[in-house]
Amino acid sequence: MIYLDYQATTPLAPEAREAMLRWLAGPEEMGFANPHSPHRPGRVAAAAVEVAREQVAALMPAGGRVIFTSGATEALNLALRGALQNDSAKVLAVSAIEHAAVLDCAEAMRGGSEVYVLPVGPDGIVPADVPLPPQLHILAVMQVNNEIGTIQPVDALAEAAHAAGGLFLCDAVQGAGKLAPPAHADMIAISAHKLYGPKGIGALWVRDGIALAPLIHGGGQEQGLRSGTLSPALCAGFGAAAALCINLRESDARHVESLWARARELFAGWTLNGSADQRWHGNLNIRRDGLDVARLMSDCRTIAFSAGSACASGSGRPSHVLRAIGLSDKEAKTAIRLGFGRYTRAGELEEAAAAIHAAARAQGWD
Image (cartoon, rainbow, N blue to C red; front, side, top):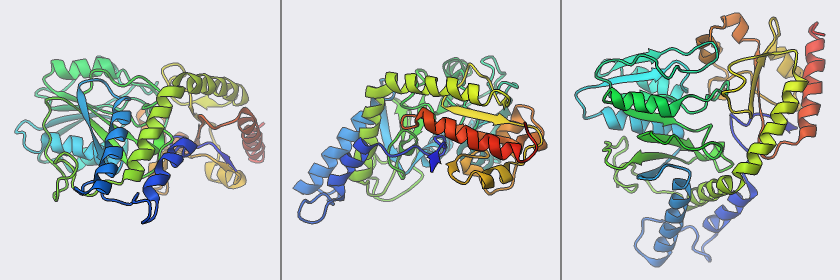
């Protein structure tokens, strides 16, 4: 099986797995201890959580705190609902290409909040000078789009949000560990399993001085903002993966650039969706008019790739991102997404391209 779905999830780094093992140990090693307990095993587990917090914080700007969550979806909901819950001026603006965790949360907040959806250009970029609504409270724009990989001008948009009197929330799930963090953001959401860490854990970074109301009530274990027992194993794996991303950032970037160049050669006859330049080059979203993608995927069962956003798979709905850049429903349904990264080999990419081209030729494509 050739894995080319890095936007859906990345392979678990061996170093992250190794960091987790101690905290999955049996009763003799005491690795199972509750990090919120006051006894010695609990304090040791709590120390591991704090080491991981520092490792994750190293991916973020200075001057903020890291709140562990179950993933980026919870982090984004905590940011949006937590920042708006006790505020009388509830005006929210989101881009049309945000992840469902932002768009659906914003939609659920209609009534108590005014929600504005901001357009993108055909290149899949939110204009830096996009008009913002008056009395803005929060602007939410992702750093890198999960479907087409376009990199947004988040620093300029953050400054625009601040000039309008609002906060800036950034979904940095696809950029964390690969790109510099959004320097001017007020809140940043990331997920461990998109940067070679374990599933089931993410984080919300909150700039100092910003108050949030909790979504989950209980013991208040995570800085009073998230109740529930933290997993030292998941935290340790997240931290190790974050540290590895920092250490390997340059080599990872060079590797992805070489894969991107080869992929563009291999799929030269396909139409690229979104900007070729202002983009994370580990994401190749391409289409061919008239292509039956369901049949293509069935004929390429030894390749793991996506027909669109993994988070919307099975919904039967065309991609909202591809529609936002001007594609018709028919065109949007002819797109595939190939995602690659640290553990992808050039030979795998070439083998996958050969299989995809063969399956396309079976549909009448040269």
